[in-house]
Image (cartoon, rainbow, N blue to C red; front, side):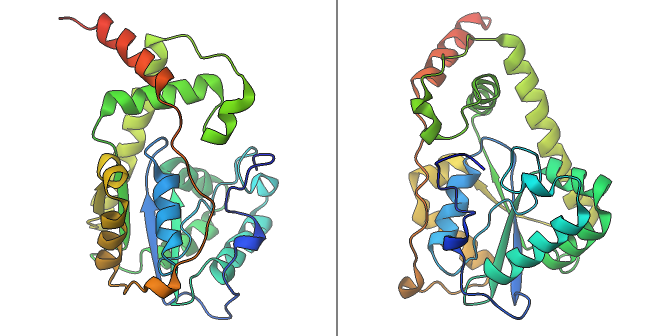
Length: 255
């Protein structure tokens, strides 16, 4: 968990606890640096689309790092998420990156089976919302800079860390990692005969309300203005560093 930053995983943001499983669940499928945290909080704020956060992020530095390597603790956290992160209308959302499912497959396959059964109830029944970025260069820059600097959220930008020096090698590595992650989702869709609702970061940024409406329509969920809730705000990170990288990258490309 990030120190002194409200990430949304804190218990004070729980919905009222439920005794039953969600009536409907869905998967918010993405890869790093697509704006998926921003979208997840938009959906959560509706009060009708669950709170689709990374409940399978058991990396040591992640929100549930204390469960790293412990299948029992991971199963308990999953059960708690289902009970307390399902919105009052019975909808539960899970945000995940491919690597999180791959790690779970290797270390806790029983839980992965339960997760898939919950979020993907049957072939051809699409309960997947995928978020992507059209601007692949900007995507690679964002991932490369965050990896080098360790700054992943706007709240960390006041740490006075040095701006990472432009690195073409880091750009290429970022592109490779992101392409592999996107390919992993595509492979899963083919294997399970699933067709996700695809949203694009640029569209979500320009019209967030339309994105929420599209997700609700895809899932067959009725939105209720009275159900809206307050959740932690996700602010866009400063763009000066990214623009500087883009200028250097463009200057190195063949004319």
